[in-house]
Length: 67
Image (tube, rainbow, N blue to C red; front, side):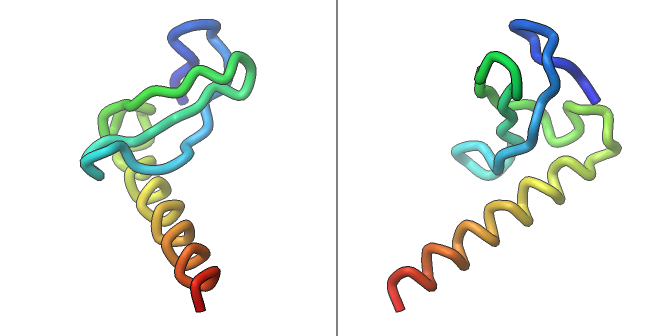
């Protein structure tokens, strides 16, 4: 997995980018948040699947709040 471009810390996938075509990551050490390509972490595209699952869970949680 790639490291943070600011501090070299470990990155965590936090969801999809604004147009749902990129993956949002956050550095666990410095808190920097930015978008990477769907295969930007060297995980053969699996990072995009993980980001999509995070977004779907977020949608479900939001829908449950309004029920």
